[in-house]
Amino acid sequence: MKTSQLRARVSTLARSSEQDDFRMEVQNFLSAMNSYPDRVAKDRDLSFEEHLFSVIASAQRNGGRRNYSRRQP
Image (cartoon, rainbow, N blue to C red; front, side):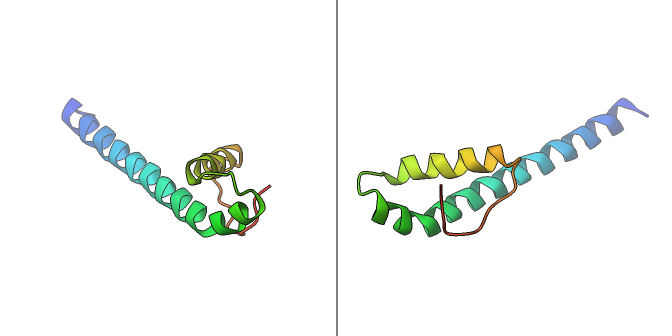
């Protein structure tokens, strides 16, 4: 394979990976927005930022799979 072809493929894979990362960030944010009212009702001192980080950590522990239920641990 020519170097230019290899660079083109690597570039395409990198863009695809960046798009996947972006989609996951958006999904995590939307999930946090959706579940925050229930969580803050239980813990009035919880900031949205703390809740968002919790949602992101949960997604990472689950290997990127999302749990779309409104419940959080």
